[in-house]
Image (tube, rainbow, N blue to C red; front, side, top):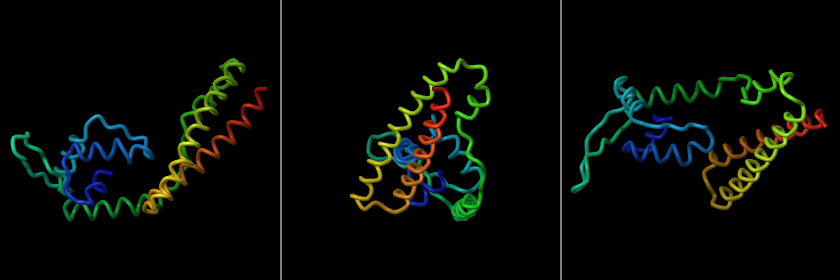
Length: 167
């Protein structure tokens, strides 16, 4: 992720953190407390370089730039990621595994709450898709949103069927 964000050009840590908290976290679920430790590790591996800049009276800022080694590693990781096929693991699977230990009335209420939340996510994804298409956003952002939308629709269908079993 860090190497990908630096493909666009050099950035300081705060810019990277802001981008992760904004656009990237919407589809990855990543919530970083600090970006500096991962950037330090990438620097140690020779994948990024760090320089110091100061603008006026502002404090010094570290500017990170991807190296040739970092670009090569990013390409390798990205291509490898396309080929990783595994069953998705969802947090609800653990609750379903221990379903026999929960009162069926409680299960139904929890599933109804889950369904409500899933419908809100669906509405958000549909609105985001419309906005991205209206703004003629880059296709990769539309594709990510479409993928999220299809996934949440599937979860809604599954949850609705499961609720019926507890009627």
